[in-house]
Amino acid sequence: MPSATLSCSSEATAQISVKTMQDLVSSLNQAMGDSGLGEDLCTVRKVKQLMHSYMSQSDDWAQHAIYQEGSRYTRNLVDDGNGKYNLLILVWGEGQSSPIHDHAGSHCMMKLLAGELDEQLFAWPQDDGSLALRRTAPLRTNSVAYMHDKIGLHRIANPSSATRAVSLHLYSPPYNMCKTFDESTGVAVQSSCAAQRLTNVLSYACSSGAAADSAMSRPPQSTAITSI
Image (cartoon, rainbow, N blue to C red):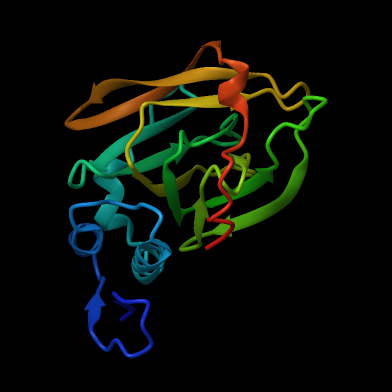
């Protein structure tokens, strides 16, 4: 059974078994402590280890994988953590994709629970406004990806025309607003996630709003985080 070492030190021996989604939630709370994810790359790596260690079992997460017909994709709250992060399950319909977007300064950790997704990584808009595609990475069940504004922008897409995809996302700190970008012009608009309740699960449907201030659409100046 996979386990995770909750230390960046090679001398660490403590192992935590991550068998179920509840184990994962408990382990994430332990790893986060009271601070969530900040500039400490060690904590970021711990969290990534935990996400890798959990092997997807649909019985664990099916109750959260609610899909709302007619939406771009559905975001279902699994756990609100300690207020410093939250954990969501996203359900992607056949052929659906997110817009190109930033993460409002938050860390994003994503694990694919079922199906397949493609992650397209873009550089921040160039002086001429264009968005340069840097790479496309296929994500398959149990793949884990990390994203932060200091790395760039991304778009997530379900390439299948026949099968939905389900992914687990950790955001620290949680956020309700981000910017989405036009691929051809680089123009950004503010986007919000409006909460609505589906059965007993809090879900979010993404919508776009007013144009973002141009100064807010620039990449972060710090380059402390490049990849994890």
